[in-house]
Image (cartoon, rainbow, N blue to C red; front, side):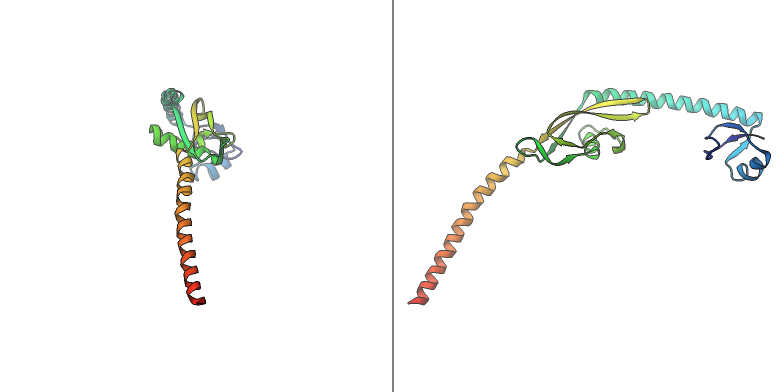
Length: 185
């Protein structure tokens, strides 16, 4: 019996394959479960039309991916992260961080699984990250990892707060001494 598979069947074939199977297997398993249809001339014509439509859709997807590739190749995503003095990050930049910043900064939505980051980024600097837009189209996104600018201001504020705290502590100590001095008399 000649059949056209409607969905992937393990150890047999994938959707759209035209196969010859045992009559009993086709009649008792594939046809009743909707996994295949008989390979009649009418069904074969439908299959050819479906294959042409899929090829056109694939070409359109590739065109869209190539347009997106041109945009992504020209832009740079800037990621700010907390870093030490020597450029080591406190934590790391992951593929989901890159995808989120690409959407936030440039409005380009890319699934985080499409960002091909071999290892997470753990130092400041410039990197080129591969983005899989389509099985046949990849883009190289430039990523600049920079330290946060607020970091230097925070320790200065803490240093300014400390003298105020010392003054308060000194006042409390003076008051305690006065109280203890009064009790001793």
